Amino acid sequence: MPIYVYQAKETEKGCEYCTEEFEIMQSIKDEALTECPKCSAEIKKIIQPFGFSVGKKHMMTDKNLKKKGFTKLVNEGNGKFRKL
Ligand SMILES: [Zn+2]
Image (cartoon, rainbow, N blue to C red):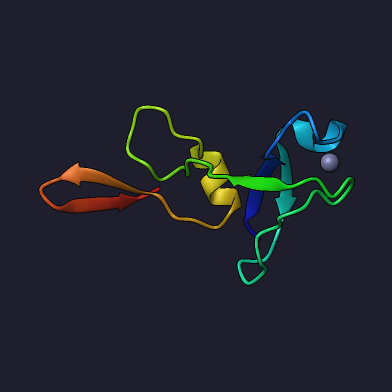
């Protein structure tokens, strides 16, 4: 299940829990939360940059990818890919 990050919309109104970003594991089918589960303050979803974005810094290491059951393909050039 994906993990979503939320934070209070108005941090001065939230509790200890939601004034800092917090993570909640939710099904993709679940509605986004609008209230803090602890103090019912309004919260917003923080969009997390996902590991597949192109860049030097990958959030997902090879080890993590394997753990999650992904197969990483390495482009060897000439249209050839190698499975790691
Ligand atoms: Zn709260």
